[in-house]
Amino acid sequence: MASVRSISDRIWLVLKGLAMGTANKVPGVSGGVVAFVAGFYEEFIYSLQKINRKAFLLLFNRGLKPFLEYTNARFIGLLFLGMIISYFSISKILDYLLVNFELYVWSTFFGMIIGSLYYIAKDFQKWNRKYIFFLLLGVLIGVSISFLEPAKENDNLFFVFFCGIIGVSGMTLPGLSGSFILILLGNYVLLLVDSVNALYETFSDILRNDYNFLEDAKRIHLLKVLSVFSLGSITGLVTLSNVLAFLLKNYKKITNALIIGFIGGSLGVVWPWKEKILEKDSFGNILTDSNGREIVISYQRYFPTELTPDFFLAILCMAIGILILLFLDGYHKIKINSNG
Image (tube, rainbow, N blue to C red):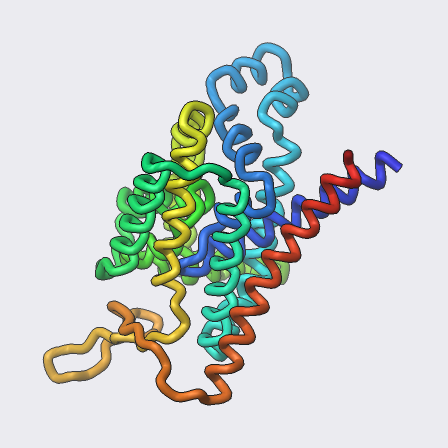
């Protein structure tokens, strides 16, 4: 019975990692929210914090097993396995849905964020002036970030490394979307679309025993970009996890109030009804990037004035998003009761 439960827990961890990876790729949605709502946020942060000097001393002096036990490697490994799977499966589906059913996708995520706010805030218990101040500070920062103008794409490897450090914030800071930060830095398409697609195409070529990509300068450059971005992300994960572990240990209520504010402030980013403002030249022609995609410089948000079928479907999608989070709440209560 114990082994079955262990296998079940491993599968659930991979699925949670898959959900985190998918959320991290969506601008305005934070993988950290998934970790927070699914109940493993603190374990995730404390596990990342243990990738430190002591861990590597254990590895060199006592071998692999003590290192893996100290760093909670099974937990982290299964989560990251799920994230990797998501980039080559669900993320591809999500890209298709965002292109063809954008309003409904944003509506669903909007509902999920509302649900996550309820889920997180209901256990906060007593609010006082200090916690309300940090809640409002989180909201202010989240809203301010959502109205910043995106920068131009920059594939300089030093800047890409910096993007990795900053962009990984979505995994560690609930409510702060790493994907949206990458949009503001101008490198969302380069790092989460073009380079990931280049890696996917490279794996496909290798499986077909086709190595012509080695002569493709653009493909090789994108693979270099992805490697540097990944290195920056690892650096950011370890660094931010140490900061957050300290805050959670010493200022847990304040940190949680700030996180709730971040999540509330991020609602403006995923507001479903918005029009793309495209970059144009001096003659009014719409500009495109090197891959022929229209360059979005910002969004004009609005509230629908007509009760169309699309409006009601969007509201239904919001309700589904909220219900998903309520289901998670019920699932955890059942699990806690069964373990008790």
